[in-house]
Amino acid sequence: MAEYIASDSPTRRRTIIREAQFPSTSVVTQYRGAREGLVKFLADGTRSPRHFAKAIIDLDERAKASSSAWVKADCLNSMEAIEKFQAAYNRLLLRKLDCRIPSGKKWQITDWPTTISVSFDLTLHKPSPTGPDKFGAVQFVFSKGEAKTKKRAEQCANIAGLIYTFCQRNLKGFGTADPALCVAVDVFSGTEYRCPGTFTKKLRHVEDSCHDIAALWHTIPPPNDYDGPKLKRP
Image (cartoon, rainbow, N blue to C red; front, side, top):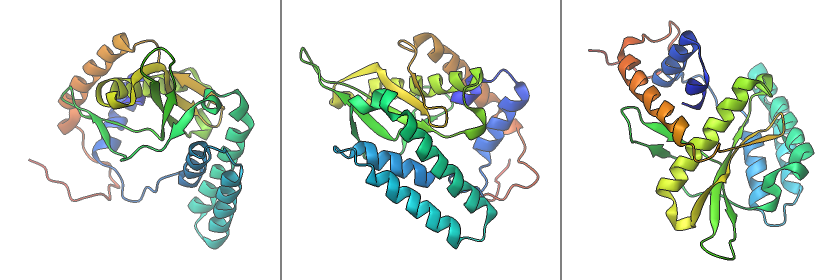
């Protein structure tokens, strides 16, 4: 959804719907090793660099043990992502915050005809001396070829906004959701994107997009090389 509302290309928007409706079983999660290394580092109160070192060793061993060019490339890109994050860490908001691994991994916003999945890697917490603690969450975004473009920045801001919307509505037990603590980190550029304000105006665009997607959903055919679950068409 974050990419959909950031795109002004009807062709790309239809492709996004197609990829959501017909996910390929051949696609393996990319950057998993890098994501795990970043999460373990930040969730460790000591912020020990051993988490980065172990992740890189594991990725190197995985690359050497595999004959797949795809796996080897993913391992190399994941190692580069860890190095980029390390280089940017001292200027990131994350270094000042209490970071915790959330329980569960499937969260949704169900206000409109299209259900929006919301994912984040860690919840972020900041004590408040005058009231409830403030909190938010962060998602790491890995896209080596698209860093620092205007569209990429908008997409990351939208991700942060959707995270804030979910936190505000569903995680009140943590304290007060703070848009400044709802963040998408573009790992390769070392850039943090926070929720833009209260996200209220952009949320109307999200609602409109949900209605558009619901109307188009059953009009879009699967790709010619679709290898996912057997289709059930009317």
